Image 1 (cartoon, helix red, strand yellow):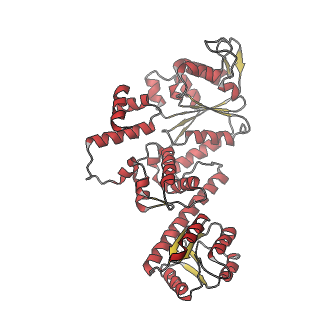
Image 2: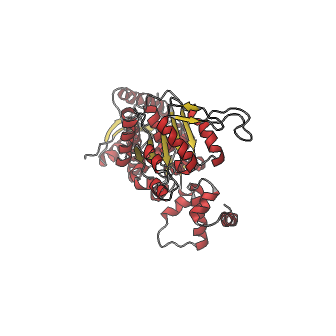
Image 3: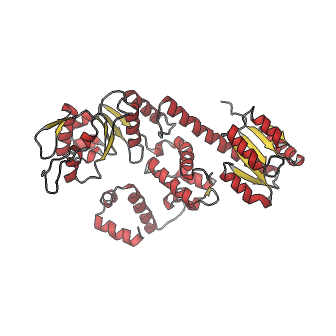
Length: 442
């Protein structure tokens, strides 16, 4: 496939600089238009679109800041680079805050200018790709924040869209952080129930003794502390959708009650013998293997087949590296807001090398943290968490066993929902984990 040729606008009232930049960009195959008068450039901007615009800061009768504003008005997708002299750095930084990609300081040599232009073009292409993909997904599929170019994930989005109109139960499988709740929201929003309630229940976060009341409600006096009648989540979701996250954590007793709701659309509140009718679309999610749970007797087979009318399997981020180049700019834009934040090559390489055990959620948190730490609009390697930085280390690099143990425990603590789960993953008892946390300052 032929690569597109960048269209470049250069505006500078110094003829020598203008000519040099034209020769420089033409030498690397860019299609360049040169203007010594900003008013002439403004006229062409009303007729043509440019990928890149190099704009001198000090010009008359229209200066670079005014021209930047006009470009952003008539061609908001154009990537603008401000050309500045040493004494105008503060104004150039202000231009970046107003939407310029970066600034280029005079004097610059031929090679430096070409490298800078190539970097700006790569940024522009990536930003355009993200915009196009998001528009494609939201217009054609209405996926909202489901950003992916992975074929398997796109197939799952397509399947979710096709079953949204029905009332059929959906089971979403995937590791923590892969977007199970986003898929559930997507199905609800594409369904005829979109104007009704979407009720979420994290089955792992509610103590077992309270979960039955949380799901089905209770009447006054049903148990100690039940001082008044209370609606459960199923009643609240009536005519809408209920999303049962971490379904594998339900006790067998509650599984039986859930099966009844799926089969007969009715249940009883705790402490009440009168059945309640309910019309609810059930979407369940799990990060565990339910087939294994059935073999172990921890999950009912009949419930599994009721929930498993349609199964969506989400791909972990480490198996879809093609999504990193679109997810990273998406989160940068989300957390940087009006500012322009970029990554050094080393930081980008580390992000692409890391395994992302916590998937998209972990990537989102890392980018949010890095944007907060970044200075001068640039995320450097030192702004990334230790476990991400270490991804760049070569196999020959040496670390002590104690350092590796600390790093491994830190990673597990970040992913586990609580200390008990972290201890189970590590294969140690909670008391040992407590001592190691104290030792390593975790």
